[in-house]
Image (cartoon, one colour):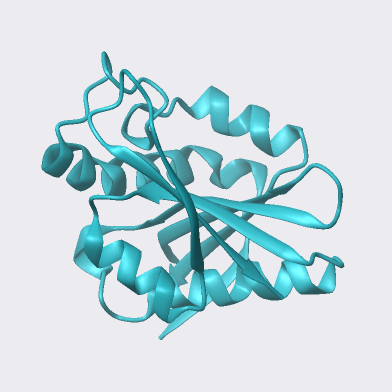
Length: 160
């Protein structure tokens, strides 16, 4: 039903919209506003995502037929440690394995690129997501309270 492919420059505006829409449900649930967490995906501007794209961040999209319904970004600073960010699936397409397909594609890309460790940061209070990542093989490495955020950040990693 789904397929994952690399995002093109022309698909950046749709990808940014998917991120904003997907992250809005989390913003609503955890009291995230532009004032307390301006870097949250709900407030992502197309230009920021385009800048990441032009800087070489790998971007993958989840498609149902030709319609994009999900997104994930993969970044590295040293070729061994990778960061998976902005995992997003439109709310009406969740719980159908699309997020898992995106993570599988991201991990495959990282493995093929010589990556050894994948790191992520999530909202610690989002227990459903925390448990989902654990099922995918990620382990908690720490939590941090940021003074302005209305949530705790949980850092997780997976060795591949």
